[in-house]
Length: 184
Length: 283
Image (cartoon, rainbow over all chains, first blue to last red):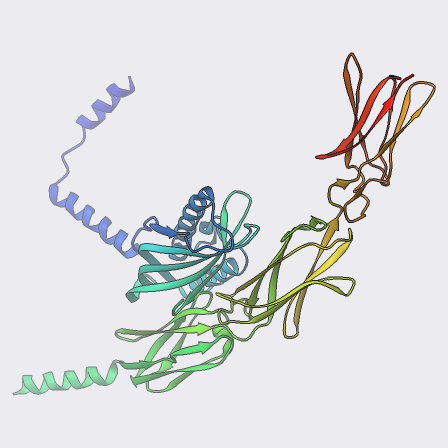
């Protein structure tokens, strides 16, 4: 019965002019562009061979790669939308408080930050004897775009280096420290 | 001619009214919490943004003048952008580096450790400045494990990538010990409780009673002489011609006790992987 009604409805619709359809599509595309690029899942390349004094177990390697990627996804989403909820529980301690402050300032200034990464090269450089903290060096290639009130004020393509501390939480590894450095 | 003159006038007026961002000078690097200045050149008014890892600010500035920032603007180490916008925008970046050490973060494991265990106690220390920035330049950290003033282990380690770590054996006395990490005047400590290790020299004595046999161990001690913890399980096993029976009994105040009804057989005692003596009972 519902299908029959649907068919009747469609047949009663007048044909839409082609130019109107093209105009609507163009307007939608411009709106999406003004909103900023959609966050792309972070691609992570990892190297745990230099981790010491404890070697990193296979399962932990997979967990770190998965959770670090998820953390960056949530960071880019949070800073582009100025939403603290988007951090999704992947940040604690100084890393979390720093991001919350950044989001608050951005909101006040109507500033938005868009990160698009070409990929992260993550190297583990320290893994504690009891396995309760890991230090990573992340070299990431980023496209960064800043907008104020929707208008772009800065765009760049840059390679950044981060020193990262991760600790195990209830069901994931979380970022406790995320500190950009000029070199390792 | 009139049109050309009007065109030149229009160009001159546009140059006078719009701000020109000719240059932007930022420091190569800034130490966290230290005031700094940014130089601008050009003319007219512009908006200046400072964007950092945990702080952003905006202000209207007069181009051609230095813009001063308080140390609070750069509390967090990392990469900062300065963007100046009028008709167009120009930006420069610089890094903020950590200030001097203000705290140590110490992770110590485990909270309870058997005595005389090799490399059983570990400590990891991170050096931070006032703004919770990880200090990545080498910092000397002294680790000490003390038992009432007596050193059980110590080492001075320079941080590498901001971290220093240390491992040592546990002592021989079943009591709390202090694990401390220090750098200059900054000291942070943890308590590690040393507990008795596995039982050593386990001995049982049997006494005939009206209903059977009463079994009691001598005080159960580890190889360092510490009484094992209350609750440590001691297993009494009786073996005779027909069967084997066992009783598990917890240690209380160093001694484990049990009752067995059978009057014949060989009774042995064990705790963990330690086997004690055997006692023959019977008529």
